[in-house]
Image 1 (cartoon, rainbow, N blue to C red):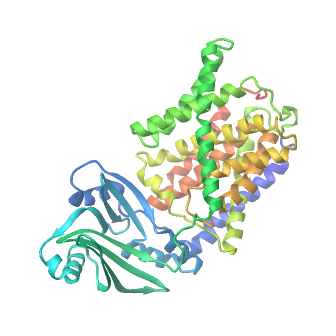
Image 2 (cartoon, rainbow, N blue to C red):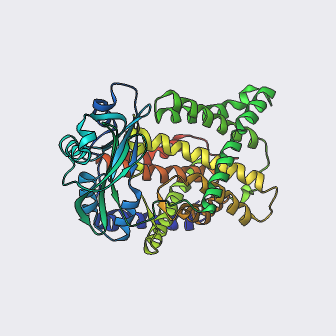
Image 3 (cartoon, rainbow, N blue to C red):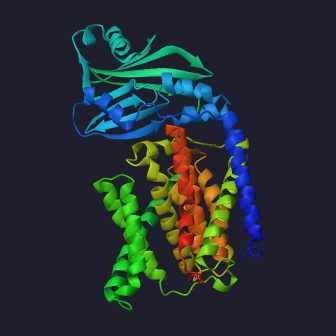
Length: 474
């Protein structure tokens, strides 16, 4: 195996070297960590004082325009940490029915309320601007508010806009308040950057997102195929034990991400999709020639997966360096939301990375290869189409320009993974994909909580080496 996979070993080692350079040299000098100071449950407790003791949902909201502007202007992350503490760069959006509260993720200060009566009194009708200013300064800690405009609307409604003395490199601090008759019903505190706020307004972006949504709906047909194959009883029930076990593991792992009924339902759906894919490809002839695979046994594919992990990280680091030089930007704080909201954050690198790797490789690589190879003979065309479809499933991340993930995943990482899948096997690319995702999630856990123990899950695939099977994998 060593001679046949020597090139992969060398490429993987070089990729890991690039990753270590990024983590301990580039990132250590240019990126200060921004740990989570206020947890979601603490944000709910703060919001409950205004929204009441009712059921609440919480999500993180980052001011992407300000983060992107700070990055493009080369401002230090120490300044970003200061802004996050004193200004609403990162907030928890706590929602209850029609009411909403914005809680600063770093300081715990209330940065906005909507859908309730915040204050009421005749002074809000007679001396509107001064009364609103006093409430915002005394109750919510806003400072040095200067009224800039009043927009009188119908039915006694008025929108008041305040600015503060804050000024950092063209950033402006803005507070908007809404008054109806003698009631203050909403206020919002926001930072504004001199950048367009809509990053996905082009017709092409909307079309791509629409097609991606249709594809996700089409995938829901796969569970029906799996049920049909199972009910038909091809070869007896014993032949489906492995498929059912893997599908059940995916469903349970997805449920563990949230430990709620919603996550359980989603887990059942994703598990059923995985079973449908396995049912379709169970007796299908592969377009890839297994005799050409350098890693055929389970042990060889696991070890090849670690090399693929190094290759993926190296390509990702090189792409991020190049994109940064060209002015592109991606949020490094969005991943902290999933970490903070997870009931078992320490397990997240295992369960989230594992479900994503199994699901995506089965659907976008294995099934895509099987179906598209019947329509297109050149392997390069099949690889490109599978990769472009796969990239559209990653458009929800905060990046600029909006097609950055399509370039990275659809034109670089995806075709590379497809080649590695055909060369070294499905288990190898699932292992490499899992390790890559687990590394990214572990970095988010470390930056959010300052705890690096989650990196131990990078050794999880080594447990499969204890399996004594030595024969080739189908």
